[in-house]
Length: 80
Image (cartoon, rainbow, N blue to C red; front, side, top):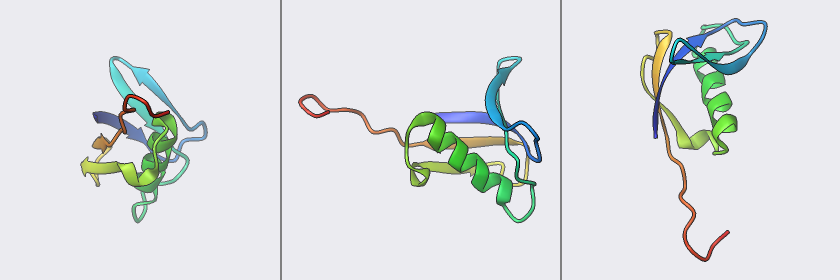
């Protein structure tokens, strides 16, 4: 699964929402030394129920518009 996300670092009210058809992720961390990117990875992992290691920043490390890839495990028949 891949996502294009608009990131708003330094937010007082962190969270994930949709605005004008775009996924918007607000994080408390500032865009300093990758702190906001790491916060985005943790937030997306929590939102999609995966480990942070399953979320990768593909494009936009220094931009507000970012592209993430999320590895989602598919449940197989007979397993829960």
